[in-house]
Image (tube, rainbow, N blue to C red; front, side, top):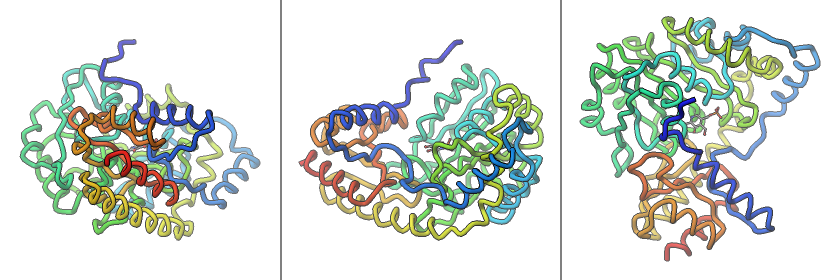
Length: 383
Ligand code: PLP
C-alpha cells in the first residue's frame, strides 16, 4: 500500500509511550499528554452492556448499526442539535475516529481539495491521505491571539475543487468553541457550493465556557451535505470501548454502507445494545466534570500567563494550547526536555500542524493534584 509521507506515527502516542517507560523505571510522571477523561463509564451503562452480552447480543448485526441505537441517536440529534435526521441516516462506527475516515473515504476523489482548520486533531491529515492519497490539503490557521477563524484565509482557501471542510468545535487542541456568528459566516460562504462539511463534535458535552454548542448540520442550507460526527469516548469515559457514530448524507449512504460491510461487518453488538438510552441517563457527572475542566482551564491559563508563556483560555474540550516561544525551544525539544528534567508529559504543537512548532498542548483531563504538580514542573522548567 502506498502510504503518503504525511502519514506519520501519532506524536501523542509517542510521548505517552516515553512516559510509560519512565513509569516502568519507578519514576513519578505528571501526565498532561493524552486526552482521556479520568472517570469510568456510568455504572448503569456497564451493567446494561453486561446484560446485553448475557442476553445473547453476541452475534453479527446490521453493518450500519443496531436500529434501536440508531433511533435513539437520531432522537438525540433532533432534540439537542436541531439536526433533522432519521435512523437510516446514522452509521455506528468504532469510535469517532473511524467515522471520520469513513466519511473521507466515501467522498474523496483524486485531486479533491480538503480545507483543514489548523491546529487540528493529530489524525485528520493522516486520515485524509489514507482515504485519498491524491487529495490536496489546504490548511487554514486559526488566529494566534484567540484561535478565532481567519475568515479572509478561509474564504481564499475555497475553490471549485473544494470537496470538504473539516470542522471541530469544541476544538482539540486549541479549546476554541465556534460561536453562532462564526458558524453563520462559514455556512454563508459555502451554502451555494457543493461542499461537504465533516463536523467533528466529539467534545460536545465538554463545553464549559460561554459559547453554546452549535451543530452545522442544523443549518437547513447545508444539512444534506454534513457528516455530523460524534461518539461516547470523551463524554462517557469510554475511550477504550471504541464506539461512535455519524450522520451520513443521503447521497453517501450507499458508499458508507459498502465500506462498513467490508471493513467492520458491524460494531460490537452487546456494546451497541447497552448504549440504547444512554442520552436519557442522569448527566450530573458531566456537570461536575465540566466544573473541574473550567477550574483547571482557568488555573493553567493564569499560572502560565503569569510565568511568561501565552495561553488563550480554552472554552471547551480537554486542552490548553500554549505558546512557548518565550522559552526559545521548538515544541519537540520543549516536550522532550520537560519530560526528561521535570517528569511532565505534554504534547508538542508540531503534532497538530506544521505552523504550530512554538506551541505545546497541555491536557487538563486528569486529576487536579497531577495537573497542579505538572504546572509547577513547567514553571520551574521555563524559569
Ligand atoms: N476527534 C477529536 C477531535 C479527538 O480529539 C479524538 C480523540 O482524541 C477523536 C476524534 C477520536 O475519538 P474516538 O476515541 O471516539 O475515536
